[in-house]
Length: 336
Image (tube, helix red, strand yellow):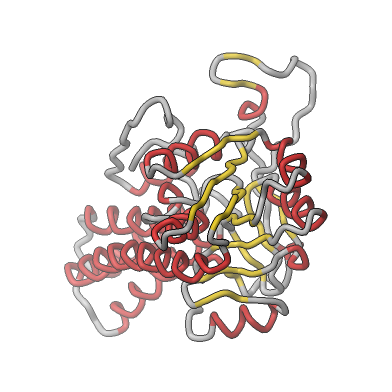
């Protein structure tokens, strides 16, 4: 996997050979983005199952569930991580029920991880096709954080919408919030879009309001890490601020995410666990100290945007509109 901490100055790849390697990569943000860490977790499970020297299915099962627990403990907010692990558990349990051998279980898990990745790529392209319609023929699009190919199996969710709009012949210019403190917008979104030849301007997070007030934003499209049953959206910290500004200035605010991001078991955003990251992500920029010793730091990785600020949730099955309690349940039927 590409080491996202090193972009854009260096394109470095990390090879994970064990589930512990994958867990470390997720925890330290070598890889990030809700769909991407779900795919990575599935492949982490497959790596350890493939490497297992278990002499019987009971021993393999013990190792399998231990690996699932290891990966589930990496990051708490993105529901795709847990969705992917539960999917692997269902496949493994199904194989056990019908008496599959150790070798057959290994093959099942291996194939499921690859299938999950391939489905994610297909889902992102479908999200792009559905979402391209909300982008005007000549559009200035604001996005926050990175919901692109780096955050998914490939192509992207929010950036998938932008890519699909460009592929459809629309003239699109993108404003990318830098997204403090990890700078996913400045480092990652801009890196992806510039490589694609898409007009991209990076702004600091505090500039979005002035940009909207000047009438320079036509639509906002962001990704999501977890969407509650009522349509509340957990995404990178600062997303809520963008949504409030968009509402104030009459700019439509869309969320692009696969169905695996929708958590119908969580009634609303108050039940979404919000990860808090190490203070050093805020207090240091590389080796340079930015904050004086003795100053307290609050560093939540995510915030929750109320459903009332969201114009639509773009999924691989179409765009969900308010009331989201009904439209999300409908679109998820048969998927969870």
